[in-house]
Length: 184
Image 1 (tube, rainbow, N blue to C red):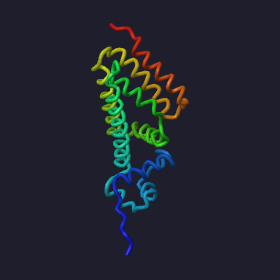
Image 2 (cartoon, one colour):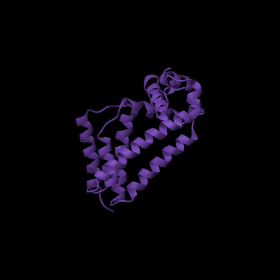
Image 3 (cartoon, helix red, strand yellow):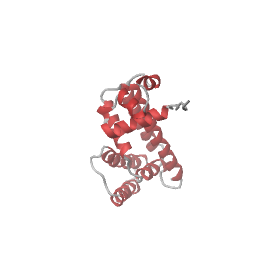
Image 4 (cartoon, one colour):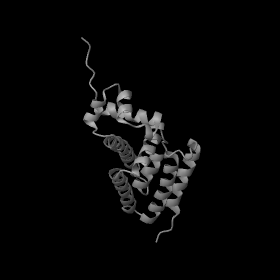
């Protein structure tokens, strides 16, 4: 008798990421994820009742990964002028993976349709904006954060990819925005 393979929620989400990387957001379906994971459609539906719920779970996981990565970098940046900002800049130095880009495009496609996803993105943005305002030179932090967000979004949505050296130079420019922005 063969061993029964136990499918975990992460296996389904891993399969969903692979589907999005291969087929884009439009290719994400319960059937495609089940096929990619090597399980029945009912197995996927058991944990994720709909395509929307599957996408929300995928977004939740990606956001948690990014939030954890940022928190780690913020902790490392404790000796900088603004740890919340400089931690986020340091996190941006690591660049993007194909999975990051593919899931981001799926998020972008769903933001126009899914209120819950829109709210997740608003909440994440609000957390970042509050972090910028809670340190020294909040206006400087906000200006640098907005520049950082532009760099991040440009790469995340694959509008342009900089080399590591170019990205490092740009991020040093973001740090300079903070350092040289006039105090008011």
